[in-house]
Length: 162
Image (cartoon, rainbow, N blue to C red; front, top):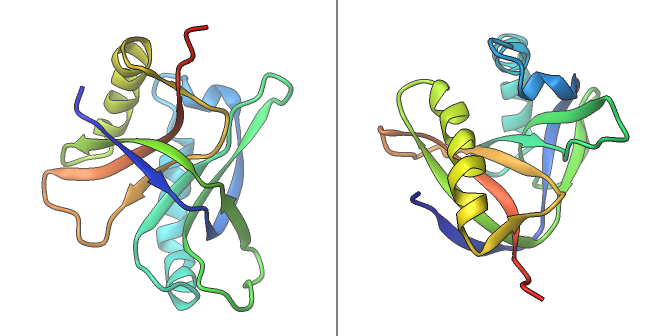
């Protein structure tokens, strides 16, 4: 599986956040998160984000899914450049860490689920890295090339073989 490892400093996102049931991730045919993206594209969310950020890259940030909770937070945001936080938005802090980065190749969002499937079935079992419980995200680069829909960034650490 094609990927790169990248160390990145922490950063803040200005985000519109919603709660989703844990099962949302694995339910066949579930469109709640794509529907959230559609809603945000139609209700002015992206315009509000662009007015308060310095880069036009868009993040789909996902909080770790916990067995202690029935829901998780998912946010659509852009890197925050400081200033006032508009009503209805929140600051999402992404901690500095090591990341495994995967390109989602395809013309539609279907490639995201396919890439996640490969991350869990190929990358995590066969690599020297394990995923840590922290924010992961899809990154939609403003100047991305045509065959890459987005990138998936997962927080990782080297496996210890003690």
